[in-house]
Length: 194
Image (cartoon, rainbow, N blue to C red; front, side, top):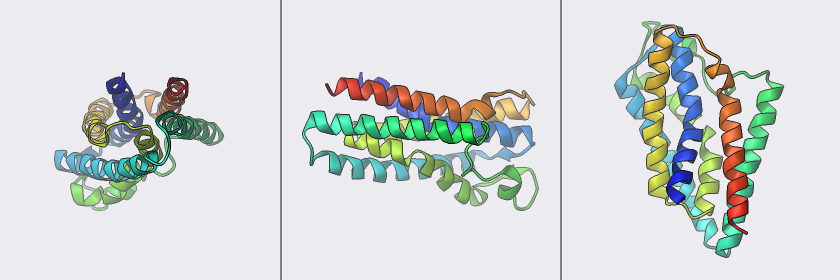
């Protein structure tokens, strides 16, 4: 079941990435493959650091307590994100820069040197979940790799939909989807600790 949790955490961490790819694509902004890889590399690095920090703290507690704390953290992040999303009327994540801010030269092509701010904004959104996963004893390498691979795939998928002007409510609902997924992961982890 650990592999399923790893996959679900990767998906939850990448839903914002899909929304970014979609919204940028709809505005005609193409994220280059090198920029996409750079964002995945930042997500990998930030996730690993946070996961190792969580894992180090997890060693302090007995296994059942570490798993319980992990579930409570992930559940708390999910509930907080859901409440924040409702208060902000279902806007995508407020920490994510808009396409016009990122495409500084306005050539509709977002290169890797224009994505540094965006890369860290997306990565910081997943830090709390990664920390909780680390405390819960999930493999840091596996979780970080899942986050990085799904980051690349979700941005690419969002871009394909967006550039084809397939307007959809997925972008607006992305934060709700990620929040609900985190709540489910948190609840499952809490029950698994008992």
